[in-house]
Amino acid sequence: MDDDEAITRALGGDLAAYEVLVARYSALAHRTAAMLGAGDETEDVVQEAFVKAFRHLASFRRDAPFRPWLLRIVANETHNLTRSRGRRSELVLRLGSAASDGRAPDDPERAALAGDRRSRLLAAVRRLPERERQAVICRYFLQLSEAETAQVLDWPVGTVKSSTHRGLARLREEVGDELG
Amino acid sequence: MSSDEPFDGLEAELTALGDLVDVPTPPPPDVAAAVRARLASDLPASADAPAVPEAPADPAQGPDPAHRPQPAPRRRRRWTIVAAVLAVVIAITAATPQGRAAVARILRFAGIELQLGDAPPAPVITTAPLPGEHSVPPGETAGQAGFPVKTLSALGPAQHVTVADGGRVVSMFWTDDIRLDQFDGGIDPVFFKRLGPPMPDYAKVGPYAAWWLPGTHPLGYISRQDGTQVPLRQAGPTLIWQQSGLNYRLEGMASKEEAIRVAGSLR
Image (cartoon, rainbow over all chains, first blue to last red; front, side, top):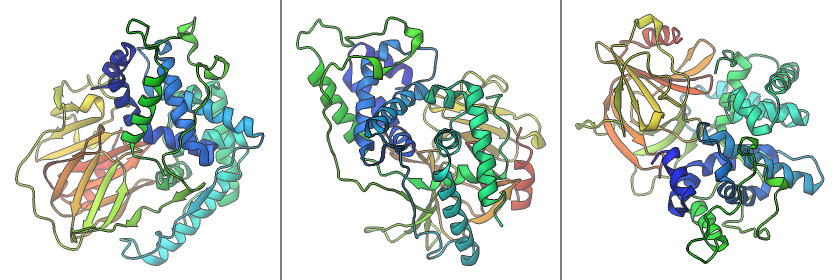
């Protein structure tokens, strides 16, 4: 069942069809909420977003893709949460230790260097000003297009471009351009 | 998306880094069941009541949940107690094979789950098509795929093109068993490959990280509905890489160098 058919059935009140959509987009929705700063309330945010998406399904434009429409609701819920907490949304990231262990096909020294580079890049992303960070996360971590990012964050495309550009420039300043 | 320029080194690096960020999530069926339970309890009891009680006046406006009245108090539920961190798991994680000693490592890259074992896996002797795979006239893929479709200019026009699984995968075929699969699977892997020695070899397609899989190996498809793994066929040597948020696998080139050269002609 593709998205369109699932939406048609869900609009008719078929909850099983909507379950298919929820399951399909669950991982992406969790990823989006967590990366935009929902923290340990990610699961609640996602559940709330799916409930709201169902209630507003009639407002979904059928000629548009479902993914950015849903992710905008997820981003909106995350924003409401972080605003209600009254503090800057925290993106807590931790580097795993699996980078250099065992039989990495790459050579260990190179893997360790790459791991260090990843930690520094991740830390630099975390320190970006909020808008630049959101743009960078949507464009690269979530791999959304500029147009999708604009829809999800409810910004003009020009703002997405400029925030991404500034964020990249800042990251370049902090960690350099190329993996050594 | 025409507004999206080709990625430079840092952008490619960020994309790769994002793939390594592992967000703990409950099993999708559990989420679906929890959402359904909430919706079912919210729906009016009478059978003829509308399933969608509120529709915004202006459909073009899109959703704006923040400014709508709440039909029910927020009921927050926990499925699991999760740590308040996103663990970044670097691509090669130690799998704990239970009962099957074959898989020693799982590497997820470019929308493909590589299941690495100590010994060459038993070959697949059957072949199966991708779900919903159908032929499309070359050049008419635009409306059918969920992403911008590219081709390999070094190989000339493809002789045959298919689209599968509702636009999730586009495959192009040339003579001599050469094929290019392109797919959008940044979050969940789309294919799996079972590999033994010879092990994958790190490569680069321009600025993009890639892996060369030198041996023939079982290839399968991971259903997007429920993650079921469906065996497809025994694949030949393949180059896999990720570029501008999309995933590519090029199969059938004679050598790693040749595969990298052809992959560099993606337009």
